[in-house]
Image (cartoon, rainbow, N blue to C red; front, side):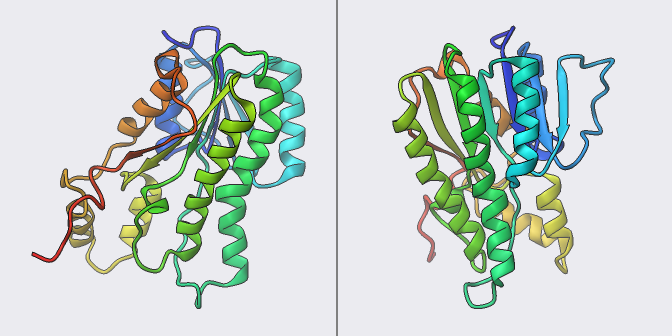
Length: 251
């Protein structure tokens, strides 16, 4: 129970990787605070009294300001922040609209800036505080037609570096860069394609391990990085990607 008496915020914690992260922190004894536009449906307050939920759009300053004022009054300090909320968008530079570009940057990058900005003052008194930013392997290697998404995920790495430098040694900050993960977001994307089974197989095959990750596999590393076991990790970007981009093609 590494997180007994610890308080953790998880953005986008209602489903996907975020839901798995919330469950893992709860298993480790943490009090968990979910920030999400969607209500988490898989929990009940009777079964999980250590779970708290605030409905908000984490890309909007006004909403977060009210939420963090409440969090400050209720919890006083925060020990870990997992900036997980994000969206997948598609398009090349020439066919991505300004509106889609701004929405992608707001949800994927601005939200992390705002949540970190408001949470850091609540973390400075915590011993071993950590911020975990969920980026993507597409910050390093990318597919076609994801200009805004890939840019947003690369920007997270710069933000991670800055936080790590500016708030050391009291606060650690690392980025986690998953490959394909079997989340509702991925399923919705693939279900929109002509051949679901073929798309799943193609996605599996871009990984050296020839499979898609489970959300729990990513959650395990995130909780490790936030824990005392990851206490010498900061300012780094960790790929949990099944080996995407390691092997040269052309056979």
